[in-house]
Structure formats: structure tokens, C-alpha cells
Length: 465
Image (cartoon, rainbow, N blue to C red; front, side, top):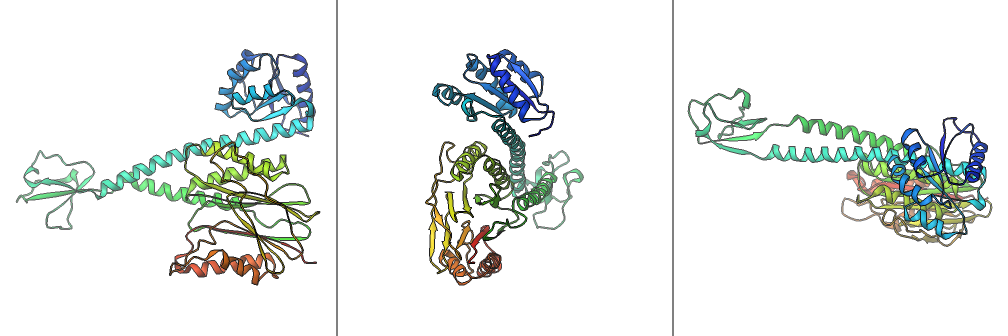
């Protein structure tokens, strides 16, 4: 239990014994933490305003809780400082008080211990750091959106001709800046407005077109650089290899239809005898969905350290990602599948995706979605699906819908039946070979045009011996 000595925790309570108890637990959980005591709203607000605070612990059972919440919540939310509420699990009024101010992170007195306090503080700080990073990325996206609008306006200006009567082209004629003159006979000769000279023989009219704007060129270059950045970020989302779990083989891959896409898969760190696979998809192309999936991946990794319940993990991730999406129009589908190597049991939770178990005999059993996609409503709970058994030789097939939506040059879709048929015919092979067969089949089916959507596939196979 160690932590950098610079960790600063603000403990707020009007009860001196509570502050002392929390200070002792923090000292037992972290190495040389800095504990800042505050007995009320005024001292708490002053501490936030005058020094760096990494985390706030607030006793909502104290008489000062209401005034403190009103005083410090705007500041903690603005600066993304995590605020953990300490309450009694037997007093619903305390929880209602925090929820009225938008608080969702709780610690209960009855179960509080140094180890739990350490885990909660670390997780809260990590999530807050991710949200701060997302804020910065959101501002960058807003800048890019404005740049795209300027680029569109510049392009429109380039393609819109301006006609000026020839008799007006005298010594005092005003020509729009950043324009070029094209003669009526469509001659290739052009002169800029800066070097314009009166014509010896007036023509009937003169056409003025916008010259290429340097700003548009800069924006295009920036767009290329952002696309390259998004591509690198997306590659970093994918795991570098397959996890090791006794009795199982695992393989996965992801193919982007363009330079960047919104697909993702990962293997989440949980207990030694558990394998948890996550697979998801975000609508859209470019930097925005990649950033969103990067944040979702980070949330899942943090949440999976706190709970082994995949429904709880997905539901809490939905709350976080809904706040991040805000008013943007993104649709996020996600599925978590947890395999227990001791009991050979499969538990899963799905927000909009479907998987299949292909038995050794070739029978395919669907694992349907258990809830709506993420990001629609923050209070949505995504429940568990029916538990399944993975028997020796059984395969678990996880995909986003990109493989099924691959279209041939004649307009035919690849479809689920063709996908499952390839898995059945090759079910005796190792997962890495089956995944490669599926990849090859999809790309050949799409032809020269390539797939129109990202393709992500993960296969888990239970050893037959």
C-alpha cells in the first residue's frame, strides 16, 4: 500500500473524531499522504481555492454536509476533483442528499477499511484524470469542427464564380481579394487582383473565381495529421497478444474499413481464474469515436478492478460514457463476456451486441443482447444474460456487425449464416487460424472495394483435452 507522497486529500466533516479516523485510514493506506482538515463549508472552499487537492472525502452525515455540497460541488466538478461521500448504509436520507447534488461515488461507514479506502481513492482519481483528458480532447474536437466548417466555406467560395461587367474594369475597379480573373474566351491566362491592368479592348464581361485559399490547405494538412494520430491511438487500443488462461485458447483481430474506425476489443484484468473479453463499436469515423472508445477502454479497466460483476461494470461504464457523450450523436455497443476456468461457466452482459457459442457438434447458440446501447441514458442498468457452460471443444464467437455487413461487388451481404458456416467447418483448428480464415473470407467477398465497415472478431475455444 504505497502512493506518491504528494497525494493530498481534503477531509471535510464537522466531527473531529470522523476526521481523525479518516486521517488514520489514509495514513495506513498511502505513504505519507497530506491530510487537509476542514470543519465546514468555508474552510473547505478556501482549501480548494488555495492549494492542490487530489481527492475530497465528505462526511454527508454531518450537519455541515448540505452547505458544503452547495459550496464545493461546482468547484470539484469544474476542476475534475473526485468527491467521495461517506455515509451510513442504513440512512437513505444521506444518499438522497448526495444524489440531489449529482454525486454517485460512495463509501459506507459500516464497511470502511484502509484497503477499501485506498482502492476507492485510487479509482476515483484515475477516473477523474480520464475525464480531464477527455475534456481536453473535447476542446480539441471542437477546434477541429470549427476548422472543418471553415474548410467547407473555403471550398464553396472556390467553386462560386463572380461575374463582373467588363465596362466596370477600369483603373478604379475594385476586385474581390484573393481572386483570379478568367477571360470570356476561357483562355488559360489569369492575372491576380494585385497585378491587374486595364484591358486595351473591353470585353463583354469578366468572370472572377476564388483562388485556392491557403487556410483550406492548412486545414487539409491538419486533417491528415489528425487522421494519422487517430490511427495510432486506435492501434494502441488493441491488445498486443492473447491472454493465457488454463484450458482455453484465445485469438482476436480488428480491421478498419478506413484509416480509423470505432471498433475495439480487449482482455480485462480480473482474478487469475477469470478471462473477461470486451468488444465494442462506436458509430462514426475519424478522431472522435477513437477518443470515445479510448475513454471507454480506460473506464472498463478501472471498473473491472473494483468489481467481478460484468453487469455492474457495464452499467457503471454506461453512466460515465453517457456523461462524456453529452449532446453528441454517438451510438456505442459493448459486450463483456467472463469465463470462469474453474467452473467452466460463461457469464455475459451485452449492450446491443450478439455473440454465439458453436458447440463441438456444430450447433450455434446465440447470446442475445441484454440491454440498450451505451450513451442513451446514464441511469440505465445493463443486466446479465443467462449463464452458459463452455464444454470441451466449444467455441465462443464474438464480433461487431462489420463482418456480417460486408458487401460483395454484386451487392450481396456476407451475413451471419456464412460467418457461422466458416466457423463450423474449421472448428477443430486453433482460434488464431479460424480468425484468419474469417478475415480472408470477408476481404475476398468484398473484392477490390474492401469492407464498408470495421471488422472485429474474437474467438475463445475450450480445450477438448
